[in-house]
Length: 189
Ligand SMILES: C[S@@+](CC[C@H](N)C(=O)[O-])C[C@H]1O[C@@H](n2cnc3c(N)ncnc32)[C@H](O)[C@@H]1O
Image 1: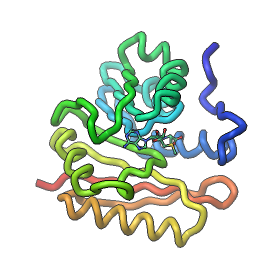
Image 2: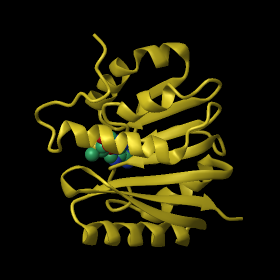
Image 3: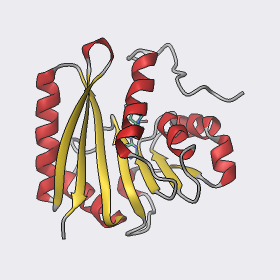
Image 4: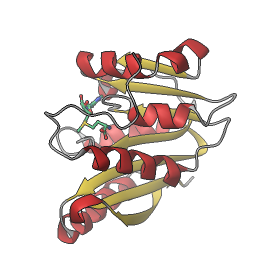
């Protein structure tokens, strides 16, 4: 049976509404076009994949997650989109994923600890290489307080700028006083 967009197990730390809201905000912020070619890093259960794929016609989304369980859940949720060729869901860590240079118009991650655990510069450099000229990178987060949001936005912008991105930051109100954050990076040549 297909899993609804807002489904989340009782074990999840944040309320169901927060999951749906942050994914919806992310997809709206990216203004997904029908012919976009997107990469999602850390797709989890594939909620954003569903929201993106239904906006695509000739476009495509590749979603990766290093967790086999998450990939299985995301693939189940998006079976129809995978079948139609609009979505591809793969088990892979971003660091070692087999992805083609200059093949994505948009790369995004929602609530993924991408830059803090490893070599941030190398990761961001690879994202830059995977984007087509004029492509965009979106780093979405969800923070408990304004101070956390500001600190995260500043450090993410600093990291992206150091790798040749021009950045803008945006914030929206989340559920239970949480804040949704996004840093958008555009490559400057
Ligand atoms: C907190 S969950 C967020 C899932 C989903 N994006 C969301 O907003 O609900 C983070 C996910 O990113 C995946 N992940 C973390 N680092 C990753 C990496 N370097 N490459 C691929 N997946 C990664 C984890 O396995 C996990 O499923």
